[in-house]
Picture 1 (cartoon, rainbow, N blue to C red):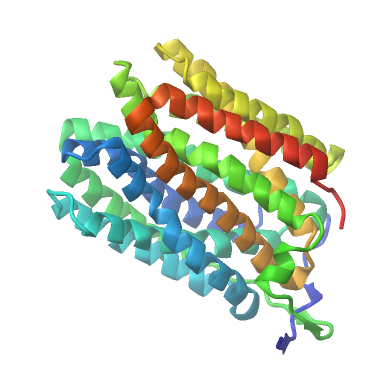
Picture 2: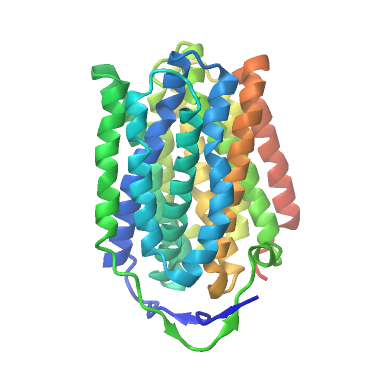
Length: 396
């Protein structure tokens, strides 16, 4: 195991320093635009169905994004610890934009759909890991959960904003226009990243860096990663299949679910982001995961626009607190030198859950229906709640 000189690292972030530093704002803005592009593909299932794809086909094409993420994220996590974050943020933004463009010219389902989605997964890894660890680097330790939550706010906004804007473009013009617009907008993520000044690292002494597996099996980290995997298995399929489910039960205003989810998640992160830091991250995770499980099950019984809004609110409130709490917990349980790896583990765990959920629940939906699919997904999340409550830990 090679030694490299970056732990402990002093990043000159005073505890009294404001969260809204120049680098925090630029990193968050760049990520916001990246995810505006990325989350617009929540409407891709409609295009796949339009081209003759089934529920299992949708699950495969949407879920395969996670396949490349699983392979690329650990490498990105190791490399950002050694080489810095900015170069990976730049690469991810450019890759996401360029791989959006070909969809404008695809008029039949072939190998290019899953291939391009694999590239989207790689772009996600590059952007999310580099941006998240950069935010952690420029933020006071005592406000890390709040910072990650605020950073996540601008990701969450796009769960509502991107599909809503995309739906308007598709209805007014076409899917081709939709992909062209998001390709052009996505380029600005790359341009903004050029302005970021990555903080210099002051080396105090050398320490041997851990491997990904060592970091994963550090006390408390594995259970937290498992919890994120379970949450991902419910979260990603819920969003992927929701537009198709809504159209099946003839409630066309599916965007209201995304808006309700976004607003409630924003609310809890803006006004409750201090809760994990004040009362403990495990105490924040447990009720959040329980309510998240209930919200997924509740979707199975939704049959009207008002049901969509109500489930979206609970879905957003619970996930809005759950996600940054677990991420901050894993980072707290890992030394500074392994921060990129810890962030990578969180991302891989969530993505693995989302990928498996997309594949498996796509098949369940095709043969048993979306109602059974959502009940099953919520039930699995309840199992995750029980495991974390019993074995999750707050301190190493």
